[in-house]
Image: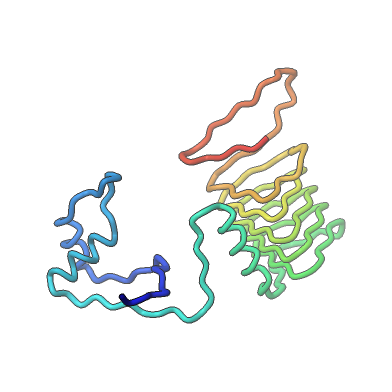
Length: 194
């Protein structure tokens, strides 16, 4: 038997012929059209299918902690660049990227950190290994070792957000009412740790 020490990295480039192959496959046992079945259909149809060996760094990002680890590794390579506005009462330490149109007010940013475009970071601590995408607004919040996608809004968090992935348009706010309950609206496959 032949031993193979390769894995599929999950990056594909197809011609429009793949749509014809997809139209002729059936859902798998888990009820989904599988990419590997579509590729096999192309092979069975005599189409050219090639693999390219990736010789550079690669990581499996199938779990949240894997995504955070890849983010950590990538942020080690960040080249400092400040295109947004950093107020005099703010402090930026280490390799930090701040995109155009972003405003940092009364905050401590400790790199490596990337902050996208058109963000407002006010009275916050943004710690190492944090990536904040475009159009995010954070006020009175501490975030470290996390990834925030576009349009995240966070305000008045009593505890630091750590090792977290926040999807597009997530809103985190504190409710100062006397009620002793938590309220959530969570998407598919959400995880909450309190």
